[in-house]
Image 1 (cartoon, rainbow over the protein chains, first blue to last red):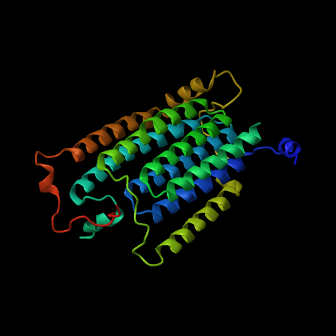
Image 2 (cartoon, rainbow over the protein chains, first blue to last red; image 1 turned 135 degrees about the horizontal axis):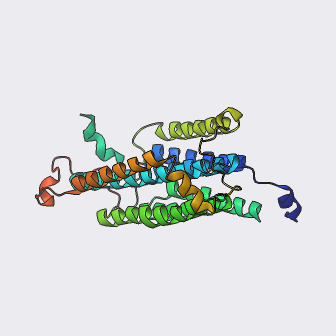
Image 3 (cartoon, each protein chain N blue to C red; image 1 turned 30 degrees about the vertical axis):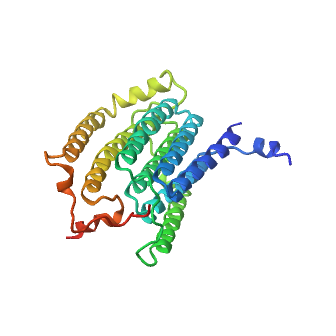
Length: 110
Length: 190
């Protein structure tokens, strides 16, 4: 099967990237909702942030405007700060409860 | 070539994302996360975002995932997670919500009103006399976005101080901090 003519006629528009980013974001959201290991929930949050970065870059390309790529850096900084504080919180929880699942956080309900 | 790379890297991105969510071992999740991040970096390269792609590899795949794996190793939680869900109907509702999010974003992406706004900087991504990608990003970052850029420094200082304050052992041995009454719960599948 020859797919070369099909590939030649197909042009990758920004919509392709937006759909891909939407799928990535949804997978991350489901991961946050379904998984109970807090570490994996954090990784799913990273997936969602990456989907947003992909959207920023796609719009920067579509609108021919560099500001979209600059905003990715701010998103990166927020992700790095979130991971640093979040992992410290996980370490503290693990020290107290000997586990790092969402069920170990039930003491928070007061 | 661009079409082929897009579908290859898009497939790898989604496969890695599914691997993050579905892998039972947190270490495997972290490795699938690396796959997703590197694929997204290639997608950045396909969209003329060379600096962002390099930073993605260095900061995300280099620093953040290493931090994840470091914490996994430190805590020793690299065992399998019990997949039984204590809450009834939680899984189907979560999947339905995920599908709803996907439909919503696709509807948003399909409408023109969500797009079209440009910044006042007027530095285009290509064309014009602004130099290469790094120079364009630097020009926008250090002129229009200088105040947010300074605020990120404050945010990073707060994050560092906060994580150090959280991780401090407060002078007591570890054994005293374990709540003996509640004991180990939850993830206890060997």
